[in-house]
Image 1 (cartoon, rainbow, N blue to C red):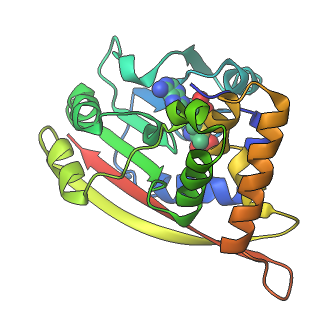
Image 2 (image 1 turned 135 degrees about the vertical axis):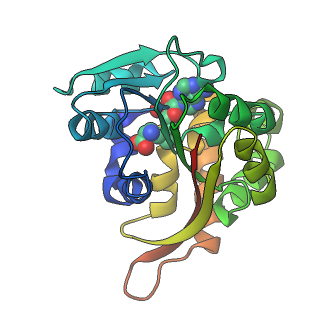
Length: 257
Ligand SMILES: C[S@@+](CC[C@H](N)C(=O)[O-])C[C@H]1O[C@@H](n2cnc3c(N)ncnc32)[C@H](O)[C@@H]1O
């Protein structure tokens, strides 16, 4: 499990918030949930928002990272923060809403996980999920290539947590095994990034974490980062005006039991 740095993660807050809000908008308006779980809640932004939106509901934010949960716990909203692994999620009471934004891509075996989450819902309950479809992106390809080509290759090999994205047909089948309504769509956001090496900066908050964690020697970590910065700079060069365009594809699902 990578260590998460909440401050770096929140640097691109506007771009990271947008898909979560786009997902929230698609939760059926007639849902009046009593029990809500935000899986991989991070610093708790959306769990807090859900608590404000549904004041009568018992809202839980679950995450494996104590650093992220420490930030979440400072929020004033009445959310129960739970440190646990999503893979072992087994709620005592069937949730009316399972919300999960930018987290499930870190978990293996979606063929088992997605049907299990859908089946955990209360009747009429909603599963709402957003994940970057990261594996196929150019920036993840460059990351894998850089990790595989240097003297660090044997240490970074185990860091490859992100899996190829299963097909939309697969996700439909896994969710429709329990859910009567399944809505799946994808969007590519074009991020306009500023500053020096902005793609590296963006990835510092997420994708680079497991690789850097796998390199305990600071010289080797610096060499890996320098190689990655050079490689990614050739794929995402700055435009004449100074900004760097960074396409970011994301997959959304809303299913109702
Ligand atoms: C990219 S952040 C998203 C945080 C939040 N949902 C948001 O949208 O701002 C991914 C979060 O998933 C958590 N996470 C990753 N794998 C997990 C697992 N197996 N169990 C619990 N949390 C996990 C990480 O600790 C991290 O806080």
